[in-house]
Image 1 (cartoon, rainbow, N blue to C red):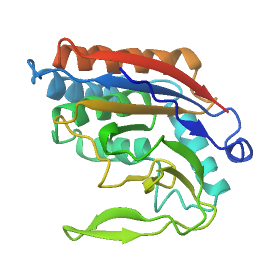
Image 2 (image 1 turned 90 degrees about the horizontal axis):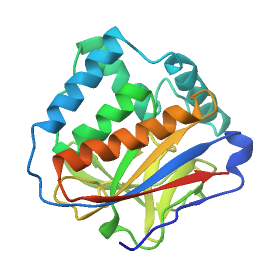
Image 3 (image 1 turned 60 degrees about the vertical axis):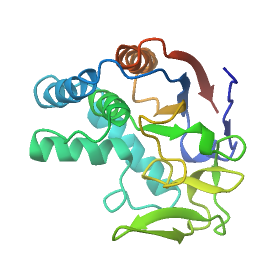
Length: 228
């Protein structure tokens, strides 16, 4: 497995002090137990409704503060974990999308943590978390059609050599690197702030890998801690 080491712009320290993440690289294997995914998603939704983690509200509030620090409006464009959990609290569940996507969404919901999943084969160069100049292309969907947008100058983005892969830190992923169960080399990023205990971040990463390996027996994983 060729390892990938994402980079974090030092300017992020002033926006989100104490930011840390887990970078998880997975080499896929054939899906033999697809029922693992919807079961994990349903369980996570029920846990949010009945047995939520104690740091959830504080962690999502900290993400709101981080978004405000680079000029985003979290009520309009919230972090990915807040958006998922809002749907669960309103509707009681989430529809199944794709086995791999369901599994990482389940981790995001359960642990109140933004989780990104990317097809690493679609990347041009190494993922990096940085501040946008404003001229980096971002491919997204509008009314079913692919369009190119550009981030605001100073916006926190994930990007590669070709452009933006995720806007407003973890609000919306692009089309080009989007992950599904057909990908062979999968990259996951679990992003946390100090309001979430570090052992919980490790637990979330371990559970993600465990569920993926139940889904795809023979899949291999490498977990790396990132800090700035």
